[in-house]
Image (cartoon, rainbow, N blue to C red):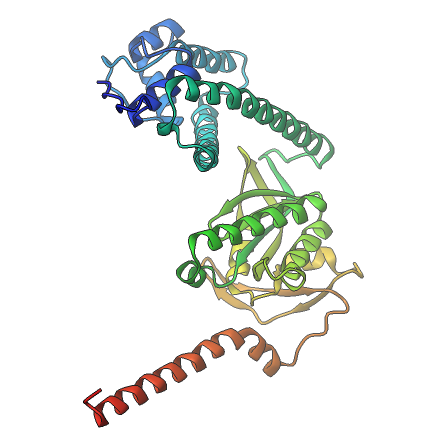
Length: 374
């Protein structure tokens, strides 16, 4: 039930939602779920599944919650199915991926818009004008980016080695993890944390794409990237950990990389190679790159890299994982004691600071006991 707008002529939150619905979807809801399913010629169960896969809230069958735009979207989805572009096995996963991607994008875009204007402070005509100006621009930019990425993906698929019968290809996989991220989330202000993540993602994207790689996804404080050539995987890994030395705003990283068969599905990657890269990242020292044996063998004759086998380690799922330290030929390795101090220097400084703080508090307490009149 619509709420009463404020007396100053601006819109309340419910009125903003209603105006957005009318503008973005073309009309107010006039259809129920069963009416959508009947018009498209699909069962209600399929219609519900598609709606849920997109990430939208479930509604009762008798609730008037859908517009003509929803009906057209369901028709287009069914058209893709009829053309053979998607099958029953892939349909839910594809729709789910689209829903997740656009949900995240929409949240981010509205966050940006909210910084520039408070929609509840505008009169209806003013808000409609803002939406009418911004929406087509965003749609055109999104459409262009999508077309560019389709071209890039097509080039990669057509020119890269063909997958085997199981759909797997050989590729390099890497994880880059921010060192001390959990601690920083407790000490940094929200604006500072947002800048840290933005700098990390933006510069990482530049490094990865400069070597024909691609970022598969970001996972909190780390990125997952892939490359079709072993040497590109190594270049990306090294430049990621080196960036902290050139730019103090870029966080220190640890990186794990692996080479082997990878299953590509709906823009994501799966398989043992991905798992090994993740495990190597978990045991890598700050500012270092660890590679698996398969990648080390691929790079052994390349003079741009220096590899040293390390002691086998036990990690989740792999009892005898064989890490290889990857670095530049001119990167002089520190003696063990110096390496330990470099790695633990920040922790040691925090310990010293805490000891000094405790000593000062103890001295203050003792001083107060001696002079209680204070």
